[in-house]
Length: 178
Image 1: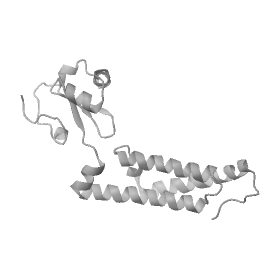
Image 2: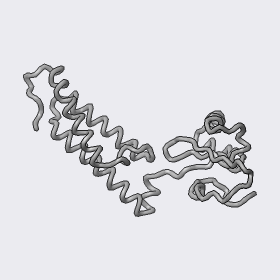
Image 3: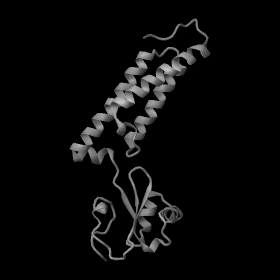
Image 4: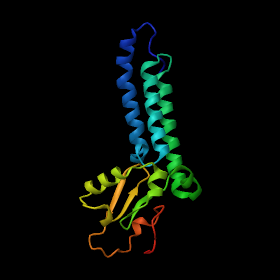
């Protein structure tokens, strides 16, 4: 498929190219799998932005053939797949492309240095604690800044401080009681 005829008005070319490019993008994303657009890593966001840029170029730049856009979509999906595969098998790649989650609150104590390092305000932590149905930051086991930028609250309703293996990979989590 080549660029649409130059004799067509730009609005007509855009009207025709949009559904075609949209369908091509949907097919590529379905074939590539669910994790292609996951919000888990910086490279995932980069891929998402790149998909949008290619899509816009195909729609608005009449010199970009639809086939070139389809190839770019497939190449981006393949690149994301290679990165995901590599990071799941090689620790060095994983550390290079994926941030570690960070404990902002550990056993009810706010870690001010982690808040500053991660540029998170205490008000955001309090909001996450409230959203998790908790009444006090000091009563939660942990508040974690996840790799996608979201805040997770780990409650300890019993106060027994159980063995929490879900926090074992969290930067700043104290593995033993202070």
